[in-house]
Image (cartoon, rainbow over all chains, first blue to last red; front, side, top):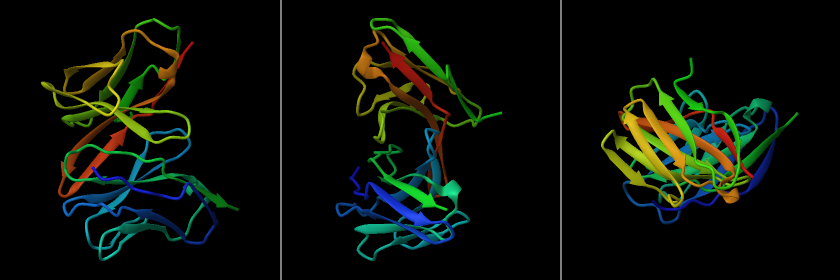
Amino acid sequence: DAKTTQPPSMDCAEGRAANLPCNHSTISGNEYVYWYRQIHSQGPQYIIHGLKNNETNEMASLIITEDRKSSTLILPHATLRDTAVYYCILTSGTYKYIFGTGTRLKVLA
Amino acid sequence: DADVTQTPRNRITKTGKRIMLECSQTKGHDRMYWYRQDPGLGLQLIYYSFDVKDINKGEISDGYSVSRQAQAKFSLSLESAIPNQTALYFCATSETSGNVDEQFFGPGTRLTVL
């Protein structure tokens, strides 16, 4: 599976939108973009995924560029509980994930 | 009760000892995984199993072995533990539903090898 590149850390004020970018310039046509987060040292938790179109669920929105070479996870109103490491992962149905080092998001009061 | 459980949650052992980490799931999923996480890094795949008779090596399988005793149980063994295997270990399960292949992670086992 292709690799992803994420900034190592970001800060966001509580109540503001958190926009977490991910570059995946070598993405293949059949690869999905998945986002997970890991709060402290707990097991990672699924957030959202997409292929081409923008997606939204109760937790977040996912914006994928038209060329699919990058994406942005948006937490619309960040809270202190959103402080976590966020991982952007590509997978093509092989059911295997390759985790990068993720983005450590700190939500500030 | 948690869907994916791991035992023990914490373990301290000595170099050269054999140790087994166990994972059980009540989700009914066929696919199970073992990951390792070193401080400040992402998770690395050790082994994965798509059903009881299917075991596959991941990125970092050297020094580890696994056993899939049943659909619900997947164990990870360190035959002769070494200090650089000190890490946080996660078990996960998955099933494809629609176009979602979500992995469900256990709480982790913190292993220290002295």
